[in-house]
Length: 369
Ligand SMILES: Nc1ncnc2c1ncn2[C@@H]1O[C@H](COP(=O)(O)OP(=O)(O)O)[C@@H](O)[C@H]1O
Ligand SMILES: [Mg+2]
Image 1 (cartoon, rainbow, N blue to C red):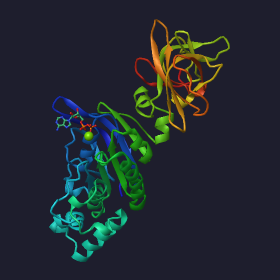
Image 2 (cartoon, rainbow, N blue to C red; image 1 turned 45 degrees about the horizontal axis):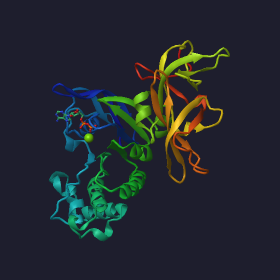
Image 3 (spheres, protein in one colour; image 1 turned 45 degrees about the vertical axis):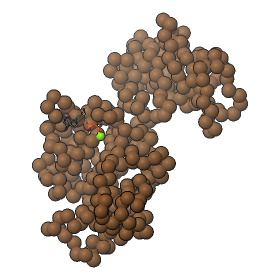
């Protein structure tokens, strides 16, 4: 078990800055997910922890030891890759045992190795497959063998780079739950890389969202969903994504605040004092955009998706100068579908309308001045 700390860590490959000035503290026993689009620097960050990439600037610590110049094999960390790279000619047993045989200087006795393999196989439910070769396993089982190979080493931390991307959708969901259980059983620090926000939200104790080499926000799944630090995070987290509407802050005679966009009025209590007239982006989650006869947002329904537990309404909302935006509303699944082209009104909870500065994308808060 160990904490992992990035202090101002930058990684450059020639002109490319893969990771830029990263500050991130991963606590002991945390399940930290590094999340972001392809090319944002997730794998590079993970490989720096493993010691597979040098660090251009800054300091990386595991526990209280700075490891910038520590060789990978001396970091006591195990990495599970997207491609499992099992030895095809070896049985599952030998594959799982292989890291324990690799380093002769630290080699355990045969009895200890067998005990560790048995323990890992037990944790992963692989007891019945130990004598098979990888070719005779399903994708999910192979994935577990790769995990087994990491577990037998009893590392201080597990690093995983998109380990589920080769599995089909159903198996991914199941394996997600198994990894959470594994984290609980092993009580060890996990650092997990993915571009899939659902994986991040369902497994992480905290999510670190990256874009373009830069950390955007680190927080619990709930914090990043309910309190996104900027427009990038707001749009990246959540499915269907947050609706965003460009407008300007207005303050009514009675002091209530909101955003105007053409003829639309979007009430919001989140406008900072003195922000009247400021260009902003209003962000509304689909579940907070509610069809209601007295709503102040008007749109034309362009489609409906009935999903059993909810109905998603797609609408065009005109925002002036012959511009319009498409919005999605999560609505009650009961009753009849609205007709395509029908005019609908939507209401919002003013406390739940997020505001972002139109230029910087930074979240604006009521307490700002
Ligand atoms: N060995 C390398 N040489 C040059 N550029 C690299 C190398 N590895 C990664 N990069 C670049 O660094 C950036 C981040 O890559 P990576 O960490 O693999 O992103 P992610 O895992 O988030 O998809 C990308 O622009 C990528 O092209
Ligand atoms: Mg990657």
